[in-house]
Length: 438
Image 1 (spheres, rainbow, N blue to C red):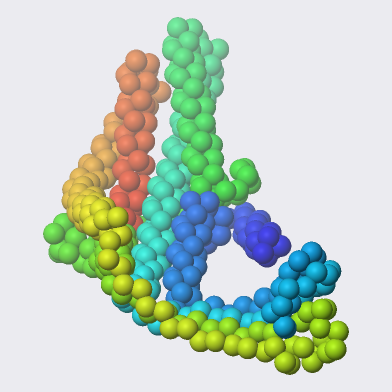
Image 2 (image 1 turned 180 degrees about the vertical axis):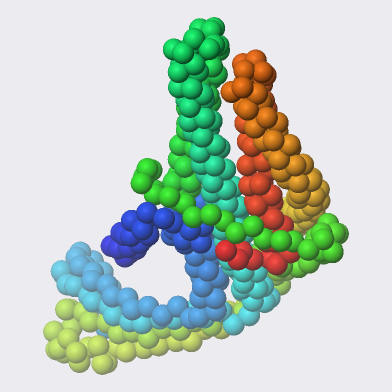
């Protein structure tokens, strides 16, 4: 079993490495790697396998137990001869072989209730596996979009450094020509230093965002890998009612079904516990033979043939008083059932709140993105005018640097709002459809 798991792990690593070797990786490919490497998702898979194994164990209780048994005894001193039933005083050995079986015929339907409980818990574990994958995909999506956003911000910061460097070179030529003072050059170089600091910060943010993605994929960081852009989905305004999205999502999402299945399993568990108060009926039987060296007249197999015997037994057990354990056990399960019912309500509440917040956030992000685009257009025109006035000598360096800083801030806001909108549209699209489409 360990060998199989090792082969699977090596295969998953090889697949992940081959995908990452493509250098440009899409979100869909990252999801495929996550399904194979993510440890949280793997834990949910193991829990589902455990629930399936428990169900098989419950089903096996319906089957008869059949076993072979044998024994070898050495007798000495005064003992009873197995053949004559008389006392003898000698050393001799006996050998016994036989087969036996036990089979439950009726146990108050306890096993059937346990099987129904096991089915519900297995299905709940499978749905929890799907829910865990969805949660990890959301985390991956957030980290992936954060990488794209920080890459864009880093690129914008680099462009700001290039622009400031060009201004420094231009002012240096003007200083050499004597058309502007040395003080102007110092102010432009200060702006360049600020832009370089912002560029370093943006580069560090990008590296941290990339690290988060690789950690979610359980892979070592690779600086040569690039991440493909994410398509921004349009979510129709008519479908953005939080109530309507919730009504559809509560019927589709696996975390709701998992909690409901787990709640339903307690009804079968209560019936299984109460079945201990009912009579039980079982069937058992055995068949065997023995050999004793004290009977030297017959060979080993002749003795086995002469001593073969068997029996069938039908056993009835009627519980009268079981130390009053059943009622407390039933009450304990009922409390667990109420906790599970509260958990269902909690999961639904969390889903409703997430959808309500997501709907509001999407609407706000759409407005922020439109405002940011308008802001960039205005400040870009303002910066162009300030740059022209500075070149003509009719504007101060302070006016130029202020216009440049305002434009850089607006462009950063536009980049952030663009990727926030992309992320939120993907999430709301998932809530509407109940599945991921990349």
